[in-house]
Image (tube, rainbow, N blue to C red; front, side, top):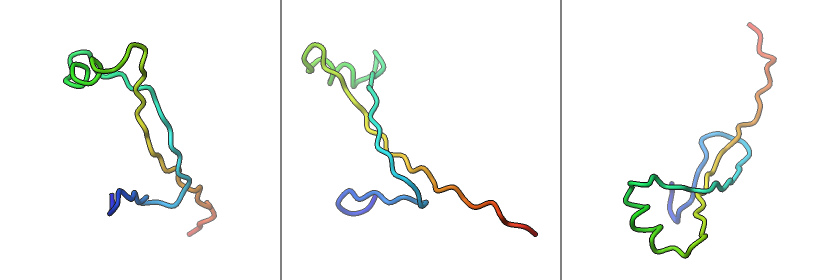
Length: 62
């Protein structure tokens, strides 16, 4: 991660942002501290950033 929270990919490709429902472990500190303060029925989401590399041309011969 660079300055100003800039994210750099190591490969050329398509960047995809996905969000998934986050359920912490029942005995973790997050569940005791964070979930107790949320209103009933609230859902936590975790963001994932994936880079799908560009397919390479397979025409190399020795």
